[in-house]
Picture 1 (cartoon, rainbow, N blue to C red):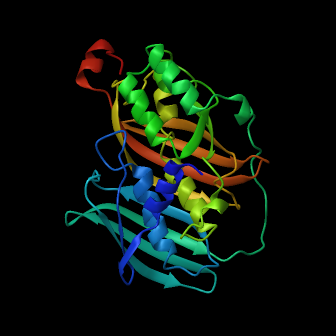
Picture 2 (picture 1 turned 180 degrees about the vertical axis):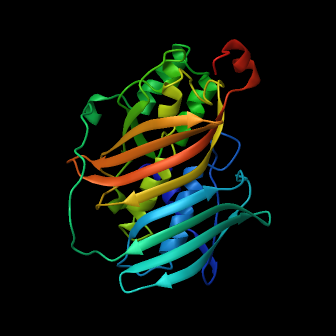
Length: 306
């Protein structure tokens, strides 16, 4: 386990300051606000710490209300909505500077038998045949696709997660309209068994996947319009809402394929849909997110069709 992964685990290990009230801190982000995946993962940790240990999360629905301040702590207040025979429901509000910045509802379920089917896993290049971020980001900076400072910030932000693009990311093919579909493989940079983590599994695995799920989901929106994203400054955006369904067991320290697509974009918003598969083809998670995606005025003048 590298230092970055240990730092991420420490970030998720919230401080309990009162019954059902937790406090978290933030890490540096590639944009001047708290990374949405971080606040979602921390909120799910807070909810999970008030749920029965034998009931992992099976779904979450969340809204990003205000940009988070990375320099201030975040207070998570949990409401115990319901504890049923099979399901547990929690609501979490994240507050900074006296204002809510994030709202999450999560449901937890005890394991049980039932009907079983799934979509097949799509084809994808083996992750071990793909370059790592440490290999590809400096090269992209040297080739002029990224400002070196931006490449360095991306590398730092992903130091805890081994994330590998199956095809080129949006900032490499600016101006080229592509199919609105993207794939990445990811896993933690090291085995979680070595951590002695404060958060029990499988809750820890699910919260780590929640953290990663916000990193690349809207890439497919950009691909459909030949845009490179915030990394090259041709769009500005932020997550609006986020929903996840956890179907089958997974391990965040083993390879997971994140298959992503965008069915639509309109009105300054873009929709991303994702499916996360285990390496042996099990559909483990479904994800849907809508985000604000706006074209800066300068780019609008250059591209009247935007």
